[in-house]
Length: 298
Image (cartoon, rainbow, N blue to C red; front, side, top):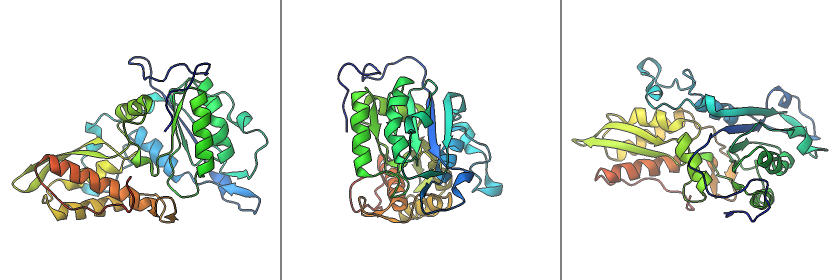
């Protein structure tokens, strides 16, 4: 991953300052424009972008899987970040393969520190660092929930541009693989919004999970549904089965198409990350369980 940029960048400094606002800009392609199809355009689905946005706003009706048993457990976490969303830029869901003026399409962005680009046309993604840096952004995250969202060449080019501009860029696949220890601004994003690689805290008594809390959630909010449904489950292989059941049924909307880089489907990667969160949380309670593992390290 890129380190701090050399001097002369639009955004000065690589360390994450302790004070100041933390605002997020979401950029995505999608909407009604993607319905009519032709052979000369690219089409973009905004399902994940909408789920991410509803999680950030702690939409009361977003998580409804528990039905009549729902006790609105998410409200106990204080995870309504809607006041810290600097803006939401929805770009067309159908765009030509080649764009005449991608930077012009982005225009002047609102001031913000974190830029999240979800399923964005690659030419727009290549133009985004310059526009984001001028708006004060320190971090660009462009997750992949399906194999075709960003190519290896574009990822490398965007990293290079961001480094020159004094920003850091990361491309988690899936978004819930976002990890700490890569860059100070990435750490700050995870700590502030409490999203990234899932992390749970469990209380085990008499062989059962008595309580389960989310420390870091998958960016779609799936981890809260999983944690709620772990309560009362035996602290053994049945807890692993519970994670599989509830993580799937939330549901996870990552692609089931095989991803060549990952050697698996991106949906399965999201499952492995939740299994690992369970394993580590049980380990802290002195309980050892075997969990499914990915073909390649995440």
